[in-house]
Length: 360
Image (cartoon, rainbow, N blue to C red; front, side):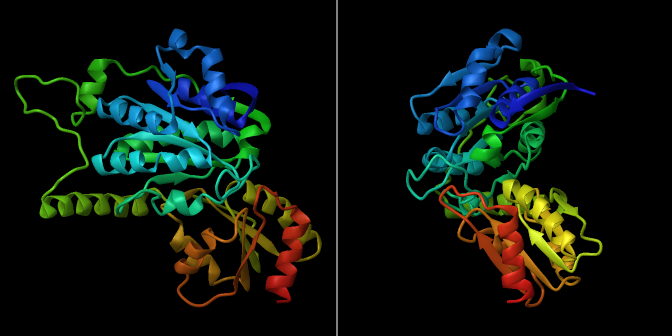
């Protein structure tokens, strides 16, 4: 068993970054994720591993620092909350186009605009549809616990380098701030410069005589060349859809109804499921872990076995669009959501199931 600690979700992300062998963190403080940077500043990872931690002058600066660090093959990351991630969209698009790996953490707060500092899931569209310009995607991981906040840092870096792509951890203000027991994974040594050169032949690590210059860019002014880049990216996204779909199913074997929810909403639905089953309503929970790639086939399959599905989100209805697109035939699918930073109670979710699905 690894080391056990009681930690906030934000602290778990920061400690996991150090242990994962991260080379550099570049970010800017914003509630409710500022503890990530604060933990790193206090922990002084440059003394533990040599990891660089820098507060940039803005979110725009931090994402472009990631571009530079990733371009040299280094493991780099940033974190922010909703308005800050909005400012990073151009840089994220550049990194997707240039095929540069990085890890981004969004501890979501309610919007639109500056909104509130309370938790929300209203950044789903921005995360999974590509908030910047062009035809691109990031792998999007949705943790539902402080433990997964830690685990998904390591997983996120692994996937980022496997596919040479930005990976986003889409959390929220509640999971970022809540404290739970975490089993920390054993530290992984940072890669040496020699290992980076060997493992990342695409990176700008200096020019030996035996090869041409490496140019890292997302720009090709020739339409045929730019189309070639896009075709390569689309092939990569198809491979992700084939190999990287992750989801969790709880008590779905005998279920007549299904809650579909991610992150914090899935935790709420787990309690709602217990309340409903105590009332002899057979409900299961389907939790997408990857929001991109989305578990469309699994949802389509389970939809054939139940009478109806309630999509529960802390927004006005976003993931429900992907759920409906997943279905082979019309099904009874409804949405229940609270937004503006309000967290729904489990009994509210049960009432919504009874009114919108069972009796609706």
